Length: 336
Image 1: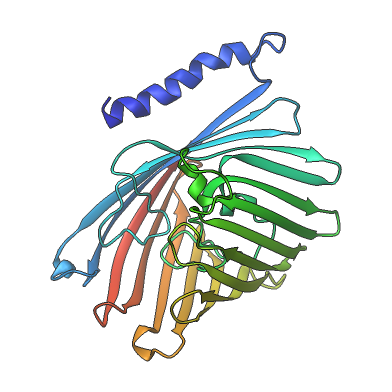
Image 2: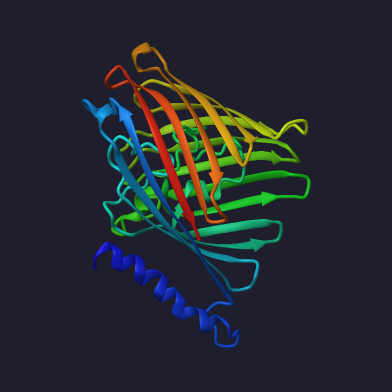
């Protein structure tokens, strides 16, 4: 089935379920919600890891569906489906989705309360899905992002997580994800599969908060294991319509040099939209040639309730070529 036909088939199939859900006595679930987004990214990147790309205009897309169902009103069955064609000079944009134009399920889990705790388990749990602590309030929707090691967002597989929060703003979580377990021929916590454990603790208050994250990958699946530790804070002063974020992250791989990353970002309400700017610096222990810095500035404004446009500029050191990757990009997000 062609990609476009798949996009039509998925919402159509869900639409057939809507009349059933209207009758609670015969409904498969009491409530099912479908939301989604399509991101069109167009821009030009000088160098970009190739030659003469400053004269080229590139375009890529990301398409995502989120299906949320509840059986009791307090639980959640979640499925995330995405497609994209990111592979070129724009592949490092925050919105980028790989997959060669094929729809794929990237998250599938079930969450339910147990007393003051929330338990999450499923065959496709992403580390990002179960982090209780907030280490940065930066919009994070352009090129740069905070916590690239402890919150890499690439650790997905069969997993279980427990999170806690109270009315005073204290939050905490612990998760175990068997990354290699996405291959059904391999066991969970097997000797030939990577297992990632993550622990967080934090505080979310009125205009202020932060958190700490510790993660560890045992590296038994053939990848390089690592231990990470990082943290960040955010602050929104009452005197101005702005939010400031700062985060510091470290990684200690089993092989290779230790790395640290400093991130500073600000979101400022200007006119009808939000002006965002960020800076990050990555330091590789014992290798000045692999150190890198990046800077970006963007402006996001809403055309209506469902369409936003974000033009922006970024420049990031490319350690493989010794040149800067500088880009002018416009992203349009359609939400439904």
